[in-house]
Length: 259
Image (cartoon, rainbow, N blue to C red; front, top):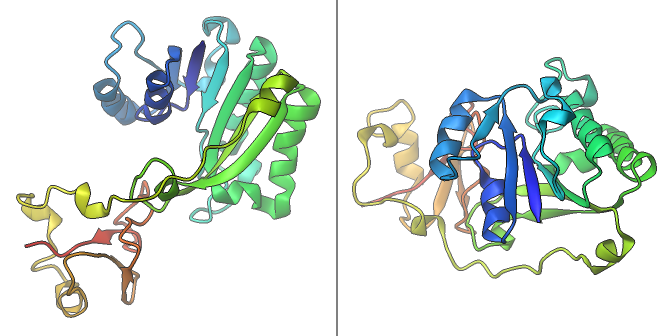
């Protein structure tokens, strides 16, 4: 089966689908820096990311496909943003309707959409109601959705809750589908770090917060966070959610004590 990869970012969803045996025929994002990392992750030189605004890409320019994948912009719905939803000042919320436009024209057998957990409850549930109405009532898909946490699926030590929406044209496929079982987390953040030699820029030594951090961060086998006014210990040994603006507000930066 073949799929397309919208709002492709650095290629995470595409890598997963290709590892599962699917073939990608189209990837798109408008972020030039994301494409730089995407091209390093995805070695398919014949099918590189198409750089451009999805709103300007015609359905006729997209090859036919079986599955649509889209991790559409989350900023309008995230608790970390202004939660403007479909009325987002930067017009990111309305990009969902380009997914609808492509689904309507191409009518693939299935889709996978991914977004922040808060999308499920945004605007007292009205946003999700509109999304489901478009997918189910207007387009005729059978839809399931669930919130999954990264550290409970795939043995990855990052606390990252995301909403996954899947849909099928065929009722039989919908009935057969179930979300995966949880996987026991055995890895910690320390399994992912290059702890022996890292650049000086990663250390807080001689930085304004150093005196406070030095007093509070005592254990080398756990993860800490600076929460604006105090140090918090993450006792589950998983990394806090890594955000696009990490470090600018300080509250999501993971801190560890190495040798």
